[in-house]
Image (cartoon, rainbow, N blue to C red; front, side, top):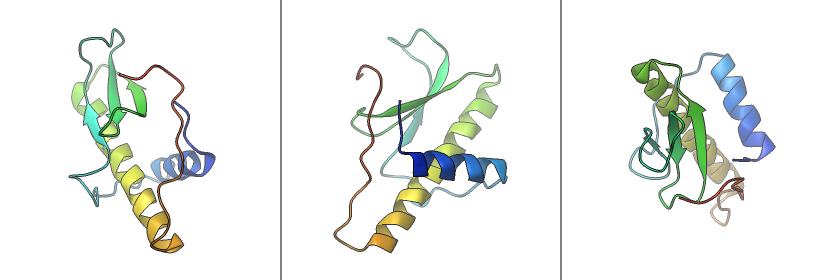
Length: 104
């Protein structure tokens, strides 16, 4: 999956800084899903609700740590979008995100 450079930089900077935000919008946006049918490689999937975009975090061998990392990334993504939406005004929308693989 490809995400825009600003979002990628934001996620990496905050992960490296040790930021673990609380998801500001847990009922909307992204969610964490574990490996399942049709996904032969073990991974934590971070998806949008319509499965149009997903990020895969390859499993480290500890499911709880992998899931915690996935939740942390989801919280950062939601925080990023909420901050950008509020700074750009009411007419803005999410930046375009493109998928590099097949849709689920």
